[in-house]
Image (cartoon, rainbow, N blue to C red; front, side, top):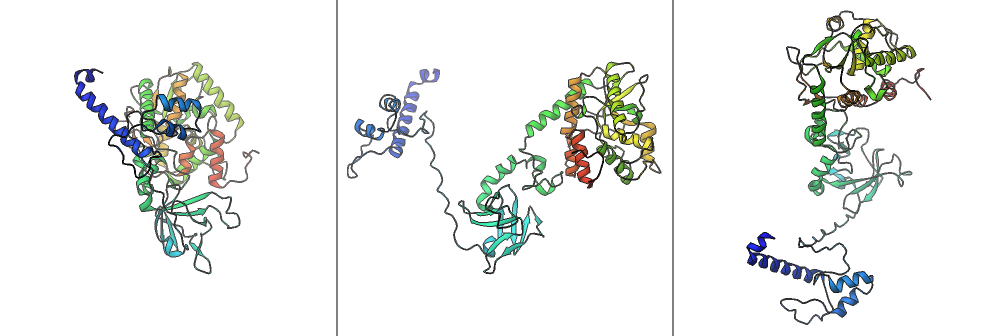
Length: 470
């Protein structure tokens, strides 16, 4: 290289140092049949061909040829993992932990542990705390000799694990524990060096670093609420894409839109439309808790709609599809949008607008004997009469762009825009909202119409309905 040409002495020293390292490596990795009483030379030479041949006798011919002609002196013949490229020699593995022995009584469980799934476990007496929450229904169970049998009906004790921790089986009974999933508890002080990286890979980093302070209900280590892998870069890229697409295709100003003007866009929720069960769930929530007007970052989501002029092909298709689905499902409110007037198609907040239409038409509930009426809710009355401030996209917005925006609005629910006091919305940036969010709300954002209907029925405990199929 140019550096070696300019500084030949430096290159010579570097190669000499590398050679010394390789020879030192050979003294560790290579052994020959030299008697123990023979004094080693200062610069060990290559092993005798006979010794090398004896060590490589079981090797294929190609490997023997390489060992005799191309192998770096003093490096092993049979170790395929050793590739001498001038880098550091292989690091010896740490000494294996000695498995713990002895009886596992109540005293042996005391203290803090880390579960296989990353859960922080603390044992005080017979009480077990998982991520700071006591497992009141699952205290430690002991046998007549005072030895630990199980953690309630959650885990059956198998014994000491090879790593020095405790091995449990995720079984409610000891009779069925042999084929059950293994759960390993490791002492917190032992697992501490690896815990931070593991928790990050499980999704607990950034705004989710504090398990008990997470915004989403139940999303703590050891629960099914953990997303598979925290990826701040992916979040940033998708939010940036959403903001860029909306900024590119939106109209400069927001607009107040009344619910009767809105129908679902044909690209939303994988073209499955709206879930009638979720729409009525939203309406019931407004009826019970009152209408939550958007102010700043609080209240309902900011709708994203596409303006559709009368007579356009996209307006005709949206109205045709929506009218067909309303005719097939009596739970939907009647379509009041007309072909000869301007309409809007919803990419976000589709269930919200149709829930408002339930109140505007005083429609009946599907899972209870109620009629949706405005009553004394003046904020709801204002939304119906004056409309809701919305971000408006241009009619020319291409179908793939509409579909992508609709998908990202649901997928990035936790990133929100701010509604300014003058009614404007800066869609060029979004802030992450870490406030409380139920698992039900989180799951409902990413499902199609059929899936979300099943979710609502499960959430409400509805077991008898003509909409249940199969």
